[in-house]
Image (cartoon, rainbow, N blue to C red; front, side, top):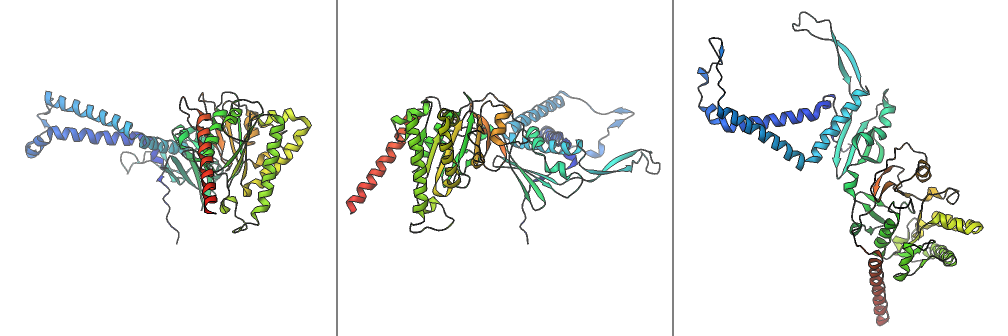
Length: 466
C-alpha cells in the first residue's frame, strides 16, 4: 500500500476570486461580531413576536446615533483587523494570491474541458434559450508552501493540454515572482519546486558553513562538492565575484581543507599570501602550484587503495582524508597570458575535473566570461556548480548554462546572479552578506593560525605519547 503524500491545496476553478472571497467573508464576520457586541444584549431582550419591519406601508427602522457609532466602530475594527492580518500573516496572503493566479492561468489559457448546457430561466418550466459553460474536467493542480519553497504538483494524464502543463517554468517564475529550483516527475504527477522570496533566503557570511561534503551558500542552496564537484564562477567588475570567493575561502578555512589560491593579476586574493601558504601570483609559481596539486591528487588516488579500510566506491571522506581546493581567479586571463603553454595547463585541469571527486581534489575557477577556447573538450560540463554574478550578456549566460529557456533579469543588487547547483535548473542567487568593515585577510589569518596551532598541539601530543 502506498503512503499518502500531502500535495497541498487543490486549485479549483472558483479560486479565480479566492482573495476577494476570503477577504469579504472574513471582514463580514468581524463586522457582524463587533455589531453583536454593541447590540447583543438588546437583541436578546427583544420580543421578536412584536417586531414589524413594515407598518402602514412605511419602514419601521430608526437610525440612531448609537447605531451609527457602532457601525463606524465595526467598520474601523474590520479595517484594522485586515491590516494586522496582512502585516503578521503576509505569507498566507501570498499563498491566496498564488492560488488565485494559478486558477486564472488555467482558466484564461482554457486548459480544461467544458460543455454547453441549457441555462434555466426565472421559471424552470420556461427555458431561457441561453446556454452557459459548465466545466467537466479541471486539471488536478496542488499548491503548497513549506520551508520557503513552493511545491506545485500537476497531474499528467496524457490529455490534450499535457505539453503546456509539462512546461510551466517560465509562467510560474514570472507570474509568482519565484525561482525554479527543481522539476521532477513523481508517480503521474510533475512537481515544480520554486524558491519563494529568494532574497529573504540570503544568509550572512557567518552562516556559510562547510559540513559533510557540502557548503551552505543560501538557506536552501548548497554546493554539494562531494557529489557534484567543481565550481565555475563568472561575473564582471562590480558583480561581487571577489567577495564571493573570499567568503568561500573563509568558510573552507574553518574546516581541515587544504587551500591553494592562484591570482594571476596580483589583486585582492594575492593579499592572502600574508596570512596563509600556497598563495601565488607569479607565472612560474602558479605553474608549480598547479603541478603540485595535480601530482598530489595522483599520489592520493594510488595511496587510497592501499589504505586500511579502503572500500570500492567510497571517497576520500570515508577514509578521513582532508579535501583540497584549488581556487583559480581570472582563469581565462591567465590562459591568454600563457600562449602555447596553455594546452599543458588545460590537459592537467581536465584530468583534475575528471578524477578529482573521489580523491577529494576540487577546482574553483573564476573568470569574467567562460570562453569555450579554454574550457573546451567537455571540461566545462564537469563543473557542476555554476554561478553567474552581476551583469552578463546573453552570450555569457549561454556560455555558463548552455542554451536554456530562461529569462534573465538584471537587478541593481550587488552579489546577485544566477546559479545551477548541478541539477540543470537555473535559479536566482545571492552571495552571502558581508558586514561593513569585515576584514577577510584578518579573519582568514586567524582561522589559519588557529588550525596550525591545533595541528602543532596534536603533533606534540603524539610525540609525547611515543
